[in-house]
Image (cartoon, rainbow, N blue to C red; front, top):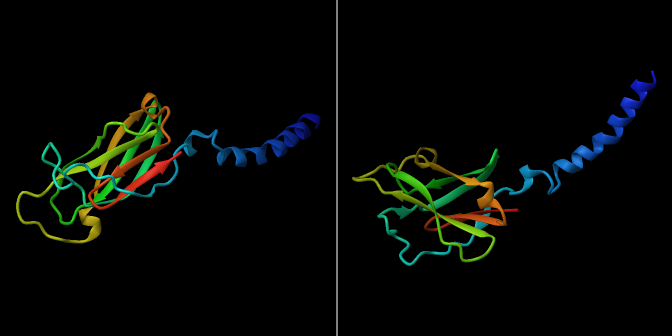
Length: 153
């Protein structure tokens, strides 16, 4: 009877602390929050990059998902038409300590392309960031031609 009562008291004391830990900065799942709109810092020529790909028209969503050994940065872009291909997140050289900026690059269609529903035009791209790369970062920004989104610690 004593051990049951003691166990019940321990659970009652520990349970409220779990709720605070879930929302605290100690929880690694809270290290980067939801993405927010950000300012676009344009490259020298925003229309075409050095590898021939263009910046996607809009960046609509950015998420950072924790994994063992790092995180997966996932971005959703919206080109103006269907048929865009070979998307990639390309890291820019670090100018501001603690801020990492990625360009969402993509090749345009080779011929005429239809404009259809937004969902049919969405392009999803991802890249892996190691724990060493994440160390010291406070903000990650993914940018396109007209919009960018950031996630912060």
